[in-house]
Image (tube, rainbow, N blue to C red; front, top):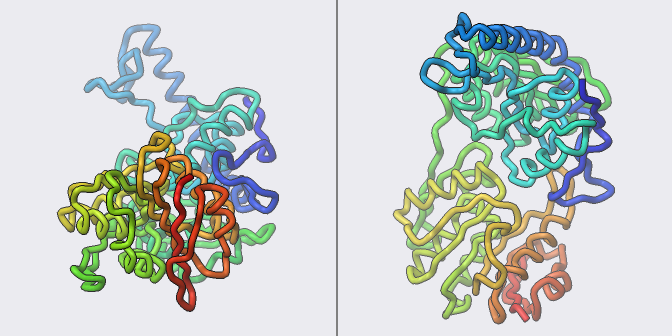
Length: 415
């Protein structure tokens, strides 16, 4: 059985700092609370593997229709595990289960692209053997959850996202599924229990340990259905916009006030730009307004969040916007150096629950790389953050365009 160390986990390529951690006590508690259920699944998987091996030796089929090569009669791979991990920040849950219990075919959904990349790196780093073949990253949907008996989950901060995840599990997982959803006490509320109870007949809470707790949900409602994409029409700014959002999208179907402030300056942005980037596009509000105002532009809307990308694509479709390509990546990793003349950015100022400037600095550097000489980065941020010096280092000459009681808009010109 592989050895495993939580201490060996890293956040890279996400932002790293002394006060930012790749795993915490809630990861350990989730695994401990789910240990009995995980052991059952590990034994079942080994028994199934043994049966398949014997069938292969005789050229026969197993009782569930597998051929000697481990495929079903329709040619599909049959070794789909019954353990699913959702919201694993950097791999603690996935790799802990895979290493300690020798689990294989773990299905994983991570909203963050940086989290996916970190999981892949940690699979090679945190154990005495490469665990990269023990799991598969999948989008939220039936392929992720069909037949799942055990779900390990880090509780999201958003109740709307938790509701979406709970409905999806109840709708698509095995009727016997048990969900172990954990988090830090300071981020948990009684409302989380209530949200889970909308999709499950039984929800209990474990004893707290190291300022963490796990909610255990079972008995999914038999007629549960996935949550539909939400949408809301905003008449202002003119000419109005349908905003679409999944439960995990920042700001939901609203238009946050920083974005509204930046939208006031669309007409001042570089007029001869041919390619523009909405960096950290969220639900796609900036992209949609820019693309409609300037149909000659090719706009790339990028975000590392799977929820944001799904939402932005829906926003473009709802508004018949065709000159926007929505891309999921980490800090413009899919775009070439000097490939854009205009970048728009409303950067986050926190990493998870921790206020930290690192993610903004990373995005400034990404924008500086992708901008062509003379290209412009337009940024809106909370005024107290004082990003001017960082913008000048990463991009070039920076000037203040506007400032109100809360936000500042600056434009930086690439050297």
